Image: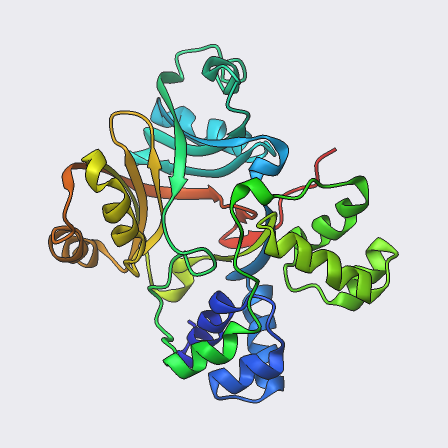
Amino acid sequence: MADDVDMRILRTLHHAPRAPFRLIGEVSGVSEQTAARRYQALRRAGVLRVVGLVDPAVHGEAQWVARIRCRPDRAGPLADSLARRPDIAYVGIASGGSEIICVIRSPLHTPRENMLLQQLPRSGAVLDLTIDLLIHPFGDLGTSGWTGYGGHLTAEQEQRLAGAGSPPSAPPSTLLPLTAEDRPLLDALTEDGRTSYTRLAEVTGWSKGRVARRLESLESSGTLSYDIDLLPEHLGYHLNATLWLRVAPARLESTGHAIAAHHEVAFAAATSGDHNVMAIVICRDAEDFYRYLTTRLATTPGIDTYGVSIRVRRLKQAASLISHGRLVPPAPVR
């Protein structure tokens, strides 16, 4: 089980994913060597991955959330096949094994029936399917994501990390086009978002100066960002739920950002469909989740109704597969 030092290292990475171990150690109150050793141990155990992600809009893609209601005895094989698809970013089984929730990357003009229906089994396994657009993510860029594990930093520590973090992302209109030359760079960062400039220069054949300049351009434009993939179960948090909320349009912006600021929330976004906000919540157990619902969520203005899907198995996160209780890189696309 991770201890307080591990939690502070995780929190430091949350603020500055590519910060040098010297700075991580200083902020975490340990030596540079201890910070590096603890990080590598978490990574080898499959608890943690720092990954570089390209905004899907660069490729003209939007993100869609699909809810597939199916026979419980067929949910596992179907979810496994969906997790292997490169156009699907998240896959989880919920609702006692009768529902698959996944996030699909596909252009806005793609007919919804072409996204999944043609690939799903032509049998009685799938009972119902809804696909809604993820319209807008909530939360401040560079600081969103699940932070309920503790390891809180002081304002002074956060300020020290500010210069080592990624530049603030710009509006989507400034996204940079990618070239074939960028592919080795981005592949390396998808494998390990903390890959050194030296290693990135080796895989690209560029100078370290050119690598640094290209990364700065991609990061500052919002084309490239970094995510911290975690397995909360290894940190003592065993309940994962997706909330489907109905919020009045006039309250959508304020309510969405308020929910995203809850430390129990890993992701929140406005969506199309009957429920116009979805939020992924991570808690220690059922009682912890109940306290969240009846205190923090209950006091958030603007929520009219809500539904809950309790996850029973997670197969894929944004840039990681979950295999035998470990985060692992997805198989390369052939």
